[in-house]
Length: 561
Image 1 (cartoon, rainbow, N blue to C red):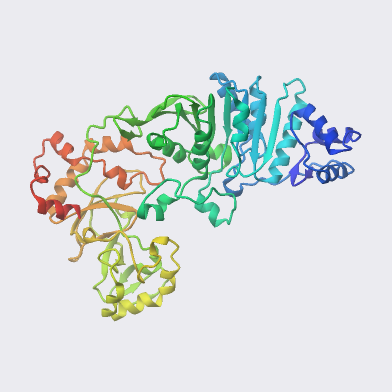
Image 2: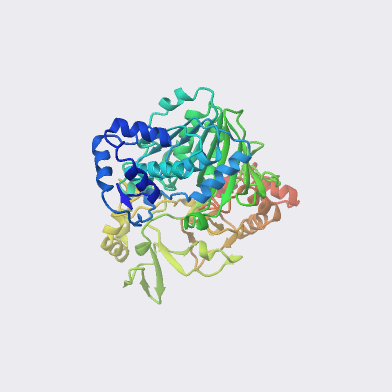
């Protein structure tokens, strides 16, 4: 039945009903309940105790609470927590102290109680009051069903993990074996901000990005990543282990940042789970395990959680971050060309258009005429599946030739200016902070490189290592959208030469060794900048203008920008 917005099992209800004579004062009730289930301060005040005793006058019903997934809060099913705890036990983990920093309904706490025999104290922290009660009732229910199990001291603390004072726990740990276990929220800081959640870490550039990166996507981060790193920083010098269910991207980021974070952890493992089966969500996730208070290691073993089949090791090798350490990275280095991302405008309903003869139309269903001057053919990720891009489905309006250019010149083209100005509200509604204080109709990802006649492009969204050759159309250079990456050339000869190198087996093998297929964007600028085409050319025995890059300054400038 329902009490305090949580479910009470029949055994717990009957327990309280049969012990009415003990539930006289908070002091007596809490003392007795601690003896029965280990929980310190089961009731915080007289009001809570009174509400429970009043509920006992009702008949027990099988009413249950609806499941929820608030703020990325996917509660871990009890079967999975039991399996995780049992696997940890079989691997030699035997904690005296257990910390569950986002304990939810207490499933990990119960799994730890069931698996480990020598626990002395458990600390569970939870911000949602209804989950606090559910944890307490679930733990009491466990001991009613398992009366012979050892009862440790259990502290269920109502607090945000971002406000909690770890030092209060750390003082009591001393040199005892510690296990930090749980399932922190699978949500980003920006997503919580959009929900108007107050349960956020103090605003900061957590990833310490600079410039534009700090203002755009790279300034966003997973709450679970923040919590994991924060706990490792606070308890990294304690003896023990961590076992967290997190998104794959969180694990990859932590391993990637190990040299910078200098966390004293080792024996890192990523055990992939079936999130659809366990949580009914389509998210790539895994159990992240590591040992605390060790000499820092820089690699992580990836395996299947259910079968224990080892897939590969990923991490750092020869000061390079790799997705598969066993693969050859002989052409890993620094690209002689600067890879660029396509144009970013965040206003596709207006900026991306199609033609019907002399008439243009947009995603709003509008039909209109424009001057040709600022209109360019456009390719998106889905258009880059071919070997050579021949025809474009769409066009785009390019309002600037370089970032920050004053857009008042567009008035020289009255039809275009009227069209853009008629939709100025849509431009001003763009949420990204990069447009703040900029000219009307401003765009990003544009420069001299955008207008190179020949380009080699690749999708950042598709799980492919295929590079597409892009030629000009109707005398105009083709633009790419911001889901694509490209390099530009002045001549077809240069473009075809580099295009052939990029589609070689050497480059494909390198990309297989440094990309993660479960990443939101498998291909990024950072990945592409690691393709050392000079090495590729040398190993392929292809003499060409790459060997003259160091001598021909004018050529370098034309290719780099």
